[in-house]
Amino acid sequence: MNKEKLLKFPCEFPIKIMGTNAPNLIAEITEIVSKYYPQLNPKKDIATKHSSKSNYISVTVTIFATSQKQLDDIYNSLNKHKLVKLTL
Image 1 (tube, rainbow, N blue to C red):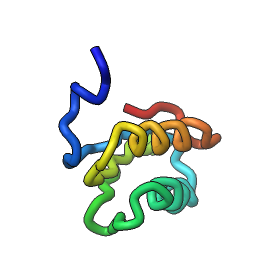
Image 2: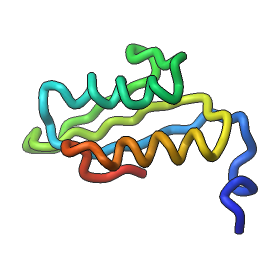
Image 3: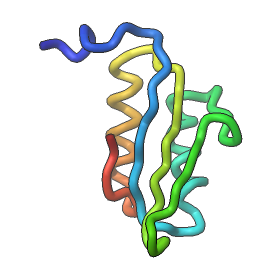
Image 4: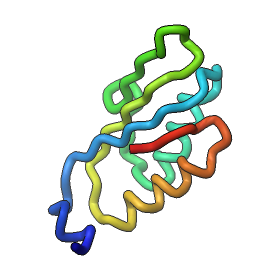
């Protein structure tokens, strides 16, 4: 099935990221997502949760997605980052 048909754009979309708990991870995720979604408000649109031993951090960035290409670009850029372990 075509991915475009799975989602109806525009729509609110949560991007889940698991990464190494490094001091600069949130800032770098914010920078990456902001390239494709300039309206990002980090205080409102980003939620975090640390793993039990705080070695990793789960980050949820909620955006108002306008196209599948926008989402693909965000995921591709996040997955190339050295501190990002997984995106959903």
